[in-house]
Every structure is written in C-alpha cells, then in structure tokens.
Amino acid sequence: LDHGDVSALEFMDAFVLGIVQGITEFLPVSSDGHLVIAQGYFAAFNEKAMTFDIMLHFGTLLAVILYFRRDLLGLVYFLVGKGVPDPDFPARQWFWLIVLATLPTGIVGLALAKPVEPLFTIPGFAAAAITANGILLLSTMMAPKGDRGARDLRISDALLIGFTQGFAILPGISRSSNTIAMAMFLGIKGEVAARFSFLISVPAVTGAVLIKSMELQGLPVAALIPYGIGTAVALLTGLWAIAFLLKVIMKGKFQFFGYYCLLFGGGFLLLRMTTL
Image (cartoon, rainbow, N blue to C red; front, side, top):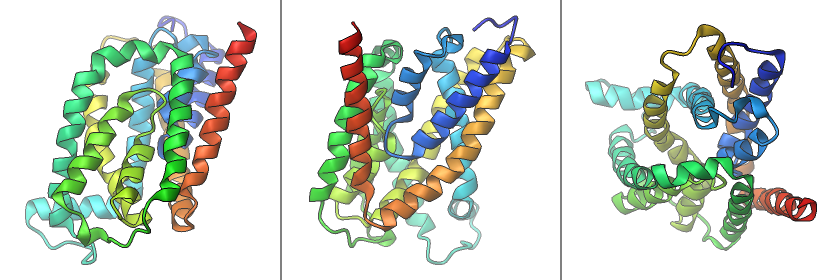
C-alpha cells in the first residue's frame, strides 16, 4: 500500500474486502482464509495485509458488541454489582466461563502467532484449510442432538471451546466453525453454542486488534481512509451475517456451510493446479 497516495482502486479494494470480512467472519467459512485469497487479487493491500485484516476484524468486533449488547451489558452489570437486565441470562456464570475460555485461546494464539504470520501470504494454504474446515462442518451431522442450555455450560466446556478457538489463528480455519462445532459435540444447543461463541470472540479479537493497531501509528491520514472504509463495511455486513447464521442454526442447517467450503476451497486448489 502506497501510504502517500490513496487511489480509487484502493477505496474499492477496501470496500470489497470489508464485505468479504463482514460476511465470512461470522459465517463458519473463515474470514481470514477468504481475505488471504481475495488479497491475492487486490494488490493494493499486499504490503500491509495482516494489519488490514486486523482493522476489518475491528469492524466485525463492533458488530458483535452491537448485536449482543444486552448480553454484554449483563456482564458489565455483574462486574459492577448491579442487577442483571435479563434474568434469563446467567451473567455471573458466563462471565467466568468466558474468562476461562479466553485463557487457552490466548496460549494457543500466542504460541502460533509468529509461525502462522507467513501463511497469510499463501492463498493455497488458505484454500486447503478452508477445505478441511468444510469437512469439520459436515462432521457436525454426527453430533448428538443438543439439549444443554445456557445454564448447563461447565468449566470443561469453556476450556475445550476456548482451546479450539485458538487454532482459528490459521488462515482458512473458521473461529465460529471450531467453537460452535465443539459446543455441538458437547451436546450444547445450537443457538446457545453460537451465542457463547460470539461472546468469547470479544476478548480474543479485542486483544488482537489492540496488539496490531500499533502498526497504524505514524501513518498519514490519507493512508488510514481505506482502513476506515473497510472497517465500516465489515461492521454493517457483519450485523447481517450474525442474524443470518443464527437463523440457519435454529433451522438445524449449520452443516450446510461445509458444502460451500468444500466447493470454494477445493475449487480454488483445482484452479491453481490447472493454471500452473
């Protein structure tokens, strides 16, 4: 990215990549994997691909905060000792479960951060990982019928779900796919699994955004404009994607995203092999 000159092409790149991030961050198809592949065709962001990814994640973080503001407000009320606004939401229990889930996520994420960063420039790896992600999604058809509700989550559930979330640092492995699939295999209701998955993403994504945001220091204002466009678009499309995913899960169709991953990831790999 030429920080001294922001072209119309870069604005369009930011807009398109913001849409890709907003939709694929919450649908279990891997936003990072799609961004790695998309950035292979949008040369403007090759130099700062990782930083731009983080800014897009900031947009989708805002989408989670807005969509689940009632739950998050309940967690804040618990912290300050006020009454919980939603009596059906176990704020005290979920606060500590979210904290516990964040610990293994952070450990795995920190251990893999440096080795994984070069993979963000390899579209072939991202496509292969998306294909593997599709297999995981299809495997949820064998998960037991979930009957465990919000108050039934245990410490072991939080640790296992948080552990799988850590591996979503790999481009092509979906965070929501890993966490929701793990929760489903633990017998947790789909809608509860999705709710917990979104809430535990808040501290994980916030930490990543804060760490990588230091790379934006010293950039000229003009260079920040495309980042802002991408963030705003990711926020708006992310709100739509959350609502859509929850509807799909309620209908018991979560595994259908696996077919898309197999077609997209496998198709891209096949295309690469035939054009070499």
